[in-house]
Each structure stands twice: as structure tokens, then as C-alpha cells.
Length: 166
Image 1 (cartoon, rainbow, N blue to C red):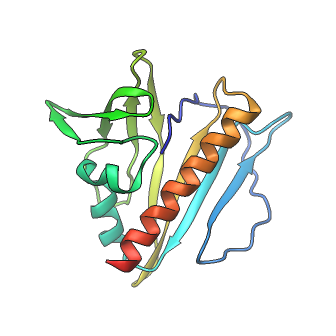
Image 2 (cartoon, rainbow, N blue to C red):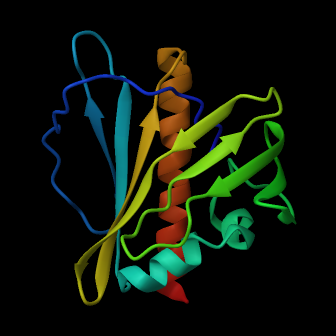
């Protein structure tokens, strides 16, 4: 996942018309008056939700599937995890382990800015789930937002590939 530096937006949620193809990630944009303020990107994974949650919630696995966030060894630092990223050294802290599939995490950038990234692992049935990442726009330009969304989609596709082939 890349920098994901958006901020919270107050917007009415509308879901674009998207046909789910189990082999692809999806991008549902919320478009209040004007441009998108955030996007929901999702992927269907043919694995039980708990297995996906356990893998994705382990920060030591981030370099394997979240290239935009973790490009090197992940180290524990008191209550956070530190890692080198394309943006420089970042700190990541996840919400506590839970039974609801919530993988929200806060990324503290080299600038000191902290960004909350909402992520959910949603069970669909006993053998498959959906992972949904909410990308917030913040002050990003249209091009930066599109690039960030593409990076998140790539990360989710990599997560799917890893988990479905392991």
C-alpha cells in the first residue's frame, strides 16, 4: 500500500455499479458534489476470512504484499512497527486483534503526519471473504489519488495471490 495520506471526509456514500469478478480488485468511488473524496477498493479471496485476517494483520507480512507501505524488514518498536517504505521510515500501528475483521492501521509518515487507513476482512461464506480498503483523498491531486488507488489495488491483488496459492 502506498502512502494513503488522505483525511476524513464528510460525505454521503453512494456505491458505483460494479460487477464483482472474483479474480479482480474493485474500486468503488464515493462522489459527493465534486470529485471523489475516498474510494473503497476490494478484492475477493478464496480463503476463510480468519486465515486472511491472521496473515494480513501480522505486520511482519507487510513487505510480502504491501509494497507501497513496507519495503524492508519490519521491526517492533514498543507499541508500533517501524519499516522503511518508498516514503522513508514509517511507523505503523494496528487496532487490537478482534473478532470483527477490522484491520485499521495508522501510518505515521516521516513528516510526522499520521493517517488512519480503514481496512475490513468480511466473511462471505466458509471458504471466501472480501477485503475492503478505504482510501481517503485528503489533499491529493486527481493524479496522486489515482496513483494511490492503483497501488492499493496492486497490493490487494498481491495479497489475494499469496493467500490463494499458499
